[in-house]
Length: 144
Image (cartoon, one colour):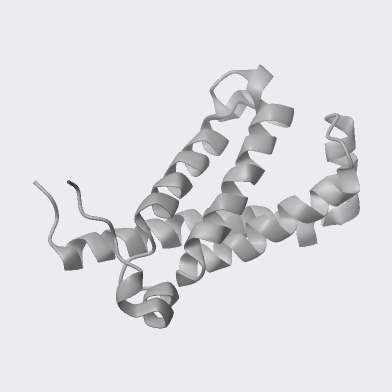
């Protein structure tokens, strides 16, 4: 059983907004709360190569990419960049700490990457800027 089109598009809107809010909050934190210098120092301490560049990449991708998800704007591109960012967070920061986030684990980055992958795979839905700009060319794919 599949959802009616309107319900599916509302579900995509809610999911995009929820995922996007989390990314925006983390990007804001890296850019404005900790600042790029603080974020880069943490990245350097974690052994992340090119820590300053990585801090800028993570902060901007999370902030701008999260906002793009909320708006439903260039969701495949924004989503792909966010997934790459989460793969980096997993590999360099969270992989060795187990699953649970309260122990520094990867459950948040895994969940965010998987949820974002779904958006990349199915599209932003009708309630998005992508749909307004692309019209009928951008559709949620129907199951076979």
